[in-house]
Image 1 (cartoon, rainbow, N blue to C red):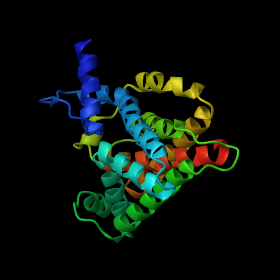
Image 2: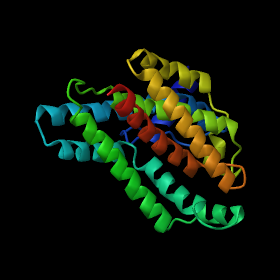
Image 3: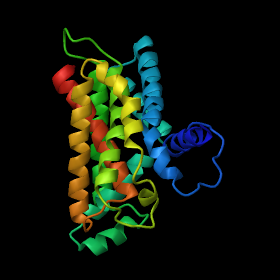
Image 4: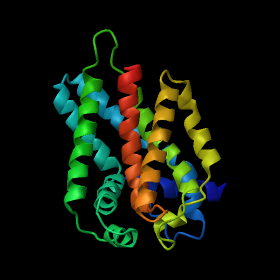
Length: 249
C-alpha cells in the first residue's frame, strides 16, 4: 500500500505543480509504477481547468479572455512540462538532419525556429478550442467535461506508445518510465467513458498519441524520448478537445 501511495505521490509531483512534499530519492522501478497514476494527474489538471471555467463563467468574462485564463491555468498546473517537451521535440524531428543528429538536437536546451513555431501553433489551437467551449453553438450548451476528459485521456493513452516503442536514449528519464502499469491507468480513467462523448475523446486521443509516436520514432531512429512523451500529451489534449468540438459539442 505504501508503495502505491508513493507511486501516486511521485506521479503528482512529477506531472503537476501541486505543493506536495518532495518524494526524496527515486528508487529503481518507481517511475514505471508512477506511470500507472498518470490519469490521476490528469484529474488534477482537469479539476483546475474546470474551476477556472466555472469562475470565468460566473463572472461573465469575455469568451476570449476566459479561454486565455484557462490556458494560463493549464500551463501553470503542468509546470509547462509537456509543452517544453513538445517544443524540444519539434526542433529535433522537423530538422533535415540524420536521426543521430536529431537526437543531439533533442538534448539541446536552446529553442529553434521549429520549436518556436510549433509552440505558437499549439497555443493558438488550444486557445481557439477553449474559446469554443465558452461560446458553444446554438442549442448545444456549454460543458466542463471536455476540460476533464482531454487531460485524463491524454495521460492514459500515453502509456500505449510508452510501452510499444523503445526508448530513444536508454539512460533518459523517459526510459525509466517505460513498462508502466497501463491496466491501472485504464482503470482510473475508465469512469469517464460513461460520460457522453467519453469514448469519442478516448479513441481520438489514442489515435493521436500513436500517430505522433510513430512519426517521431521514424525521425529519431526508431525510439522515442521523454520530450516526445510531452509532445504526445500536448497533441492528444488538442485532438481530444477537437473531437469533442466536432462530434459532441
